[in-house]
Amino acid sequence: MIDTLLDLDGSILDQEGGYWIKLEAWRVEASEAIPHGVRYSLTLHEPYGRRILGYDNAHAIKPPKRYKYAGRILAYDHKHRHATDKGVPYEFQSVQQLLSDFFADVIAFC
Image (tube, rainbow, N blue to C red; front, top):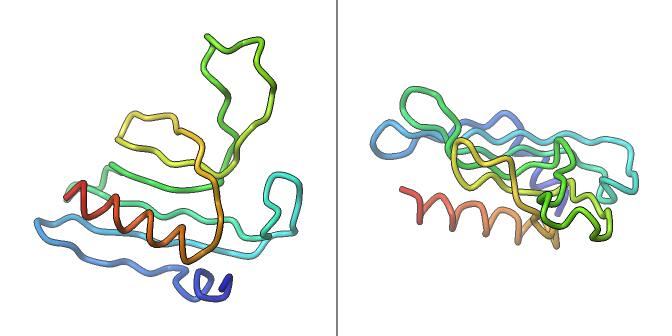
C-alpha cells in the first residue's frame, strides 16, 4: 500500500472553484518518528495558492503549553485544519486510511 502513496508523488488535482490539491510522498529511512519509512505532504490550496488544509509528517508538533507536564510524546504525523493551524496529531494507520481521511476533509472543506 505504501507504493500507492509513492505513485501519487507530484500529483496536482484541480478542484472546483479554482482550489487544487498537491500530493507529495517519498521514501525515507524508517525511524522512530517515521516508522513506515515514507515522508508525505497532502495539501489543499485556495485559488491564490495558500495552503488551507494539510496532512503531513514533516515535523513534530508539541503539545499545547497547558500540558507542559504531560508526557513528551511528539507526533510527527499530523494535520493542519486551516491556514494558520500549527497542527494536531494524526494517527497514521495505513495509506488507505490516510487518503480516505484527507479526501473526506477536502470534501467537507469545499
